[in-house]
Length: 170
Image 1 (tube, rainbow, N blue to C red):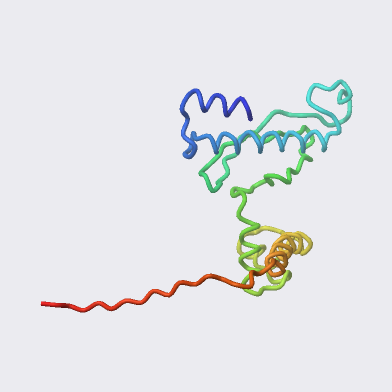
Image 2 (image 1 turned 45 degrees about the vertical axis):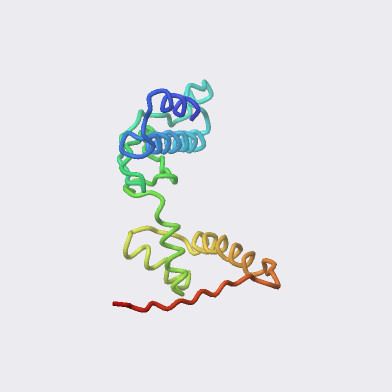
């Protein structure tokens, strides 16, 4: 990350856009997360001798373009020889990133239950979101709303009334 920031600062890279800093940082974060998932799946890091003869190993990368709020980002997704690796950060066949939480909160704000939200996400987006995930996302909002409701309220609020008349004179 620090290298990306230093390179972007030196080269005058724009923040937004296809080759912008945000897209490059998104790519770096996602690829690092996918590598971590692969390490967890296989039980060893890349180049670790403990992985020799383990029955499954890395098998290169495949390119994938996903849509983000900052534009399309092409990432390298690691593969394994047995084809058992199922990434959770960027699931197989997923083409969009980061809009599921917003959709859950929007539907919840409209009064849908967790079962309704689960069915809607599956029907419209083809996303299988468990009721537990939906509850976890909405619980965060509920906690914030509760904090806001219980905030201290000032006894006196200054109010300014402004009144005016507009009269046309010839």
